[in-house]
Image 1 (cartoon, rainbow, N blue to C red):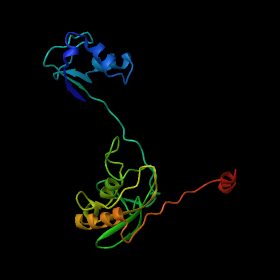
Image 2: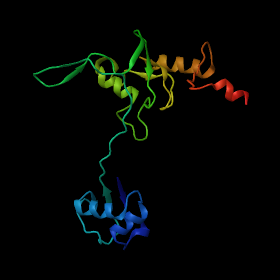
Image 3: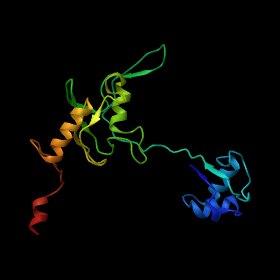
Image 4: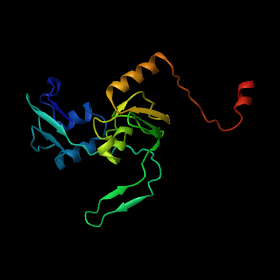
Length: 195
């Protein structure tokens, strides 16, 4: 993260600005980050009591892990001894249908369709692109519609932007298609409705 010094920060100690303005972590974290060089001022290490000046650029390097997502069982690997690369024979996401123009997959719950928020790589499109870059790589698949991250179900993915637009318009206008949502319920749902 990077920002230039705000007027209200001028003359204040670096540790105070981070603790008061960026309260994501306790003061002890910011102190350790400044000492370790994860927080810099204009690209240089400074002390916790450094007084912020006009034109200073504050940077904070944070290591974050992307949240995990659920995938199908990836039990069929082959390993090449020469380069130690793993080749996944089975798709990490169930492919329900595929032809030259469209791909239909069963998206698991917990996985967003495209990069958003904390997700850059653990997305439906990125997982498919990593699995088969020659067929599903960047710019080769186009979303027709979305399902929320926590919703599982079938997703249509076009292999051209024009088909994605055309099918997307059909879904939006409910022209010759419909969406159906099913919910699994544990227990006697009917009894709850009667009371």
